Image (spheres, rainbow, N blue to C red):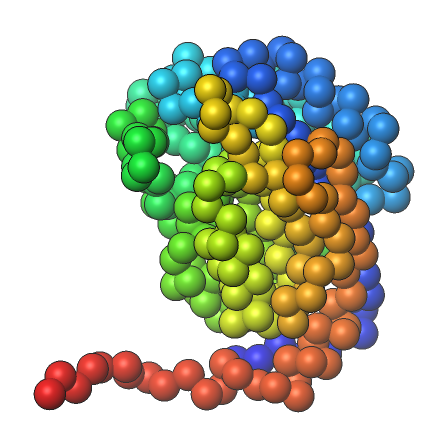
Length: 279
């Protein structure tokens, strides 16, 4: 079940964009993404990642007005152009997708280096607590999606998915090298964000991009604005603290991770059953 050492895979360079989206202003948010990438992202990057609902901000009542069908989407074209310009894979955070059959989904689109839309993952766990009601505006996605990026296998999740370790274990069993969690995480919940993003990396011995929005949402409600790229032992490789906007960048080493996994073969210790004996 464990990964074996692969001498053909060396390193993979990741840049992730922390930003404060303007509520309901898609054009302004696209322009901000363009400016931040131009300012902060190197030409030799392998993967660019954006946060959750960056086109509209964390405002559930505005979700449906911002929705686009991916077959005729200006945002999809915008992200495709970024992938082509930087010859980079792009995980486009998440945008609200309107499907052909009229459903609304919180969907993360993925592009290859040529700008082709190669995959999409729709958020499987919707946050409808503490006054938020995401489940009233979008539907749940169907299944996890593992994307091959030049033989680096990337498992996609969005925000509240981080509370469900089952999805990360499923990715790891399928050979995941890297987890991406694109979020718009609230400032009032710092301990869960810090603890769970690090825990998913440690539990599964897998690199993790934990990217969230920053800045004011509305009134006194703020995004947490502490994004990190973590290694397979939970150590921080790169981070953006507080409410700053910009890119964090790290180079991950797949060979080092495989060597570590070969020394600590945790997947081999999984039991076939965890049936609980109640006494």
